[in-house]
Structure formats: C-alpha cells, structure tokens
Length: 215
Ligand code: SAH
Image 1 (cartoon, protein in one colour):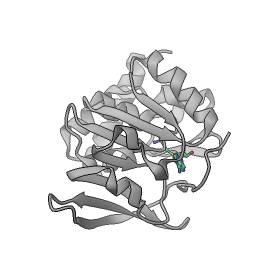
Image 2 (tube, helix red, strand yellow; image 1 turned 180 degrees about the vertical axis):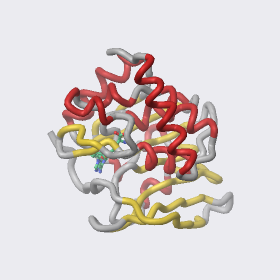
Image 3 (cartoon, protein in one colour; image 1 turned 180 degrees about the horizontal axis):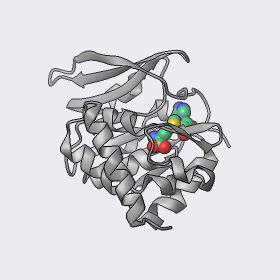
Image 4 (cartoon, protein in one colour; image 1 turned 60 degrees about the horizontal axis):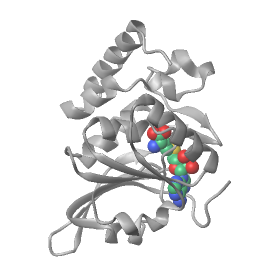
C-alpha cells in the first residue's frame, strides 16, 4: 500500500479541478487531498484513480466520482465530533473522507463482500470506523440520533426511518429518484420536528435496494 509523491501530486491537481467545479468547503477539499483514493480501487484502475470519474469496486457497485463525494460532503457540512450515519459503505472511501474531517462515522452496507473488505481495509489505513452489515433503510436505531445522515445510493423515496433517527437541527443528504435521474436532496430537520427540503440538481448513483441484506 503505497502513497507516493506522484499520487499526492495527482491529488493536488484533482483538488484544483474540484475547486473549479464549484467546491468551496476547505475542510472537504483538505480531506479529499489527504485520502489516497487509488488504494480503494482495483489495481487495474490505479492510473485512473485521480480522474474525476466513478469506478467499479466489485459486486456491481461503484465508488462515486470525487466531485460527487465532495458535493455531498459539502452539503452535509459535517463538523468535528459530530455523529454521522452513512448508508452504502461501498469501498469505504466516503466514510474515510468523513473520518478525516474528525467525524464519528457509522456506515451500513448491504453487500456482504464489500462490508467484509472494508472491515479489513479501513483499519489497515488507520481509520476506526464503525461498520455494519445490514439494510440501510432501517438505519441504526441503537446508535440514533445522528447529527447528520448521508445516503450514497439512489433512493426511490425518502426513507422515513432515517429522518426519525436525525437530531432536531440535523441534516440528511440523499439522491432521490429512479435509475435515470436522481435529485440531490438536502433535508433539514427543524427544531420543531418538521422538515425543510431543498434540491440541488441531477446525479446518478447505483440504486439503494430494499429488503433483506445480501451475501
Ligand atoms: N460510499 C461508497 C459508494 C457507494 S455505492 C464509496 O465511497 O465507495 C452505493 C453502495 O450502497 C453500494 O455499495 C451498495 O451495495 C450499497 N447499498 C445499496 N442499497 C443499500 C441498502 N439498502 N443498505 C445499505 N447499503 C446499500
């Protein structure tokens, strides 16, 4: 597992591209500059790791493109020591970006292979992230409430159980829609328990699947 001078240089360039595309949150940009994204990809894709593109991570899933990770994280606006729930661990890259920002990360994945891979790999990288194998639609009731919730798969509708597990004043970021188009949505739970919904344009994610967890 090497993170060379060349990799670091490529990351710097990527961060400049993300700035040009409109990412302004310095804490987010710094975290992306720190995390060695190439280590989350299969060897075959090593040289593409620092292009602003999504890539396959096995089990038919993808690691989101860096711009999408940065955009979602900026909308979520996590602060150090906050409790954040991520749905869709995938490669674990997004979870590490959050952890690098000082957040206490809880992440749920429904594909057993990806869950197990992340469970071994993230500690090797030095990240202590609480990983769970299960159905993200249910959230994590024993650890609720959360300051922030981030869904990194395309949800057909707003999962009600997750809104319930959000603290008053908390933020939930989720791409909502069908397989052709998902609207990036920010739900803010107001102190009186009602929610405010704002939309931030179209994205494309792998679907958030319902029902039982999968081997
Ligand atoms: N955040 C990931 C990318 C996620 S891709 C990264 O940084 O690499 C979306 C992930 O959501 C996939 O791994 C998929 O298996 C998972 N997923 C889909 N439906 C889910 C559900 N109901 N509960 C938990 N995970 C789910």
